[in-house]
Length: 165
Image (cartoon, rainbow, N blue to C red; front, top):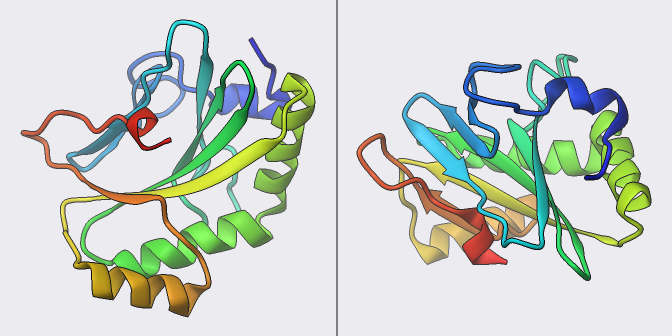
């Protein structure tokens, strides 16, 4: 299993540890919204809580990142759980990707630890749905693509982001 250095203290181990946002080792949750990753048998994954754990500064940041190592690739999957302010979710994801030095260094550490280039994707998990035109406008405004906006409510099955890779 790959080592994430200082971020290991913010890797989800089980429900509530090290953060109440850890629904389990590979389940992230907040205010009724949840997302998970189910790696295949030969893959390795870790969930790192970014906001208020690994990154504690006052600047915008997304909630978490899943790191996934497959046989041939590495992935950093940024996660923002959001109510209906999708525009703000874009801002948080973009700032994290481009300006949060702790995250940039963590992504580089993951690449070095696995010996694989790291492909980066951003996901928004929300109980609010937007149409394709609004999504394209947000992507153009923020000069950033989002892999998917996943719908999540407490009564639904937890979305698995592995299905979007």
